[in-house]
Image (cartoon, rainbow, N blue to C red; front, side):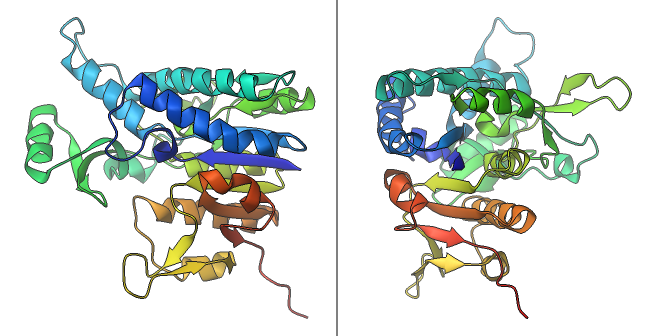
Length: 307
């Protein structure tokens, strides 16, 4: 079975956790323990979030007196792919002796006229109290929005149109490699209509949407979206909260989910299932193997044919 896994940013750096290298390494070791069990009998492609990491690099870049202007988000996104990809690759090599592992810096094409550039919605960086967030917004020209636990910077998040390196990922899978790619949704680029030349843009693409697109392009059997909760929940955060176990894309879209957290995951899962007829699942990182075998998480399946 060919599985595309989307690791949430909080799987690599927990909410409220200091962004130290040691903490991220410990979280990656935990993630790899869960992922290694999937790699045995399956082709495995691993994507990952980068919200906390790119936010930290953006802060450091903005405060660096050696720079005339801060590094743009596409460059910082590439840096996070290299950092997280290296940590994952080293841990996977240790967990899967004899298996080839490749960490690939990946570019994702977006439209230059995507309306998302005028309406930033993608959370990056750490959570701040409201007053501190507003002060940073004034000082640095940020857009900010309320997250589930506080206030965070938001940036443009255009829709992914194509993953540039899909053929390279295909070739690596053909050689039985575990592939780490499309980190942070991929480095956002536009492509010249005539020459194909790529130009970086100031944005962060939603990693779940890119994972769904990549899974479609790779003809994956399963899109597995791993996060820090065991299921998708209906009426989340209310006394009526209950797990959703088995659902179709239509049923999933009929429910309301938080815009900046669960909604992109459910929409990505729904898109993949609708476009391919494959399966998607959402659940907790530690239960990855059980989710892939239908014993945990929320399964998103095609609509039943009538007649």
